[in-house]
Length: 83
Figure (tube, rainbow, N blue to C red):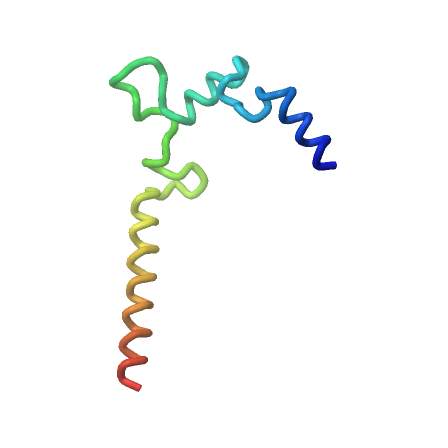
């Protein structure tokens, strides 16, 4: 089974490297945020901006999560020191 996968990997590199396939090129550019124009770089893809599923700002969610985790750690530490 492993050798079968290895031979497939060796013979078809375009399966691994999706961005090199011409039919997926526009999808890849949309995801990354490149549309050929410098001033519109932020349109399309990248990690920043709004999450398409929830509509929330991704950075705000990440910041909230980090704050929550830090608060939990501080509370746990305080309780441990008190005991």
